[in-house]
Image (cartoon, rainbow, N blue to C red; front, side, top):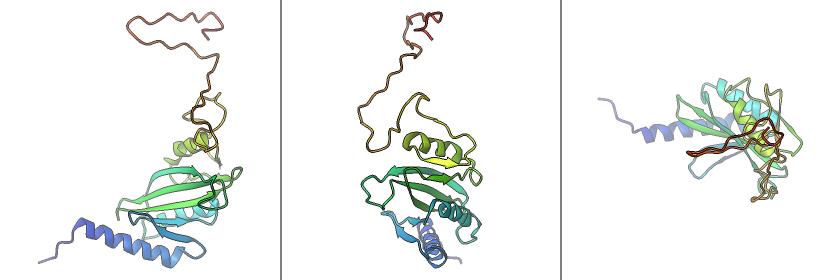
Length: 193
């Protein structure tokens, strides 16, 4: 009769094996840590190194990353996580092992990050979101333009110096009316355009 191993025990076993693999093979000159949930974070040495790690984790038979859960950034203006302005975060997942690996990398304000759209197509919109909200640019991105904010918007609203209550009105907006009796819009005038 075989022994029943709980899914939680399988997860912890897989997590431990991946942590050991990362420690043995990838932690040279890189900081390796665990978050509050015991999930692995590895700090890349540079933006190019972050992309190399993402590709390596996909090819490594002991890690088997095959899914990009998220790609985001945060403003490190206070310098808590290092000497550069931003921290890029790649949330990676193995659907086979059910483990997560987070890759973080420090990014300067004017530094370009290589796109990973050639590795994960889902990175396309996620990188556009980071570009739009933080102003971080991605080299060789197929369509790097705003995705959330209006093209006429100035600034990047998730930077810490951006005023929380700032509003930016545009004089050439098309009036939008909802309700049972919407107003008619005269599109022949300059105001209605």
